[in-house]
Length: 429
Image (cartoon, rainbow, N blue to C red; front, side, top):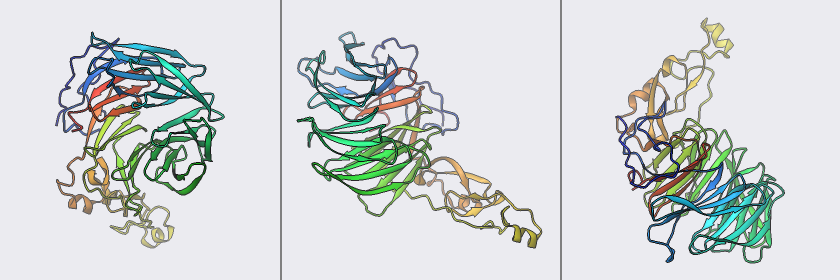
């Protein structure tokens, strides 16, 4: 099936050099099975560290105006306001004492927390008209670069991780440090469950750590590992109680925390590292964005299956031909040893001749074709090959995203110094 055309909204662009997406499919990807997200706006910016999308409800602004707080790694904070002309222009341009590394914005309190390269977290309050940011306090949170920040309004906590391998939380009212925990590697993902006070920390070693936080101490609950590369992003669904982790190994794993069965569902849909994750709770759709420029929308409202463990064997479990390290069987049968492969559906160790077929297995998370043994290939039905995700090309290497579920808008920033705003309602609805 060929790609469907774009559905752009009639908003002028600021310094936009080209349209956001053409109808080209990334090499190696299946064709789209639904319309592309529509391009709303494209903004040129300095190297972007983090972005957030605000759908303003301020009575001092015209209805429908959207603001884009942008933290730039060059040491500036910019808030983009859509003017009456329909164009976006910075309403705030604030210089920071150190390069910015991450941010967290709370729309209810208009509180903007910014992590810096020097380990400081600077807190500001934005004015109602979003034309001024007032400094509130600084937290000396880390010894080096702040990597992640979360502001928890219900508890008045500021959670953060840094390159010093420290997780810390502070009281946002007093500014006092409440506690800390040393991680095994530099943290690159941070999520929090308000109801249970569990914090999820993903690090560059590929491990996810779960801590139970109290007012002034924490308890290690468990750690788990499923990625072969470092964790690059985390996303928590407090309703279904599942955690999504993206990794530099190009995969996403869904961890069933609430089910207490240790279920881990793997999703394979990127050709490069997964950079960011967002979740639409109302439709149970996961949005993953990667270094390959892909925006993948996963339908999580289906009954998915765990990938099988790969079995160990000294010979093909289909034809009994020896593998190349099985010298005894090679000598006894006078046969040359073969290379070992594994069927992605049954997990059996097979030779190349017995696994010459390829098939997608969407319910196992394989949206593109993977190696399967001949018998499994015959058993897979057309219904089982029906895709459970749609693929879209953003035309830039995505670094950060923010999804506004109310409007169905997705904000992406890339290494090309461009910020793009998408209407996701054609595919997330």
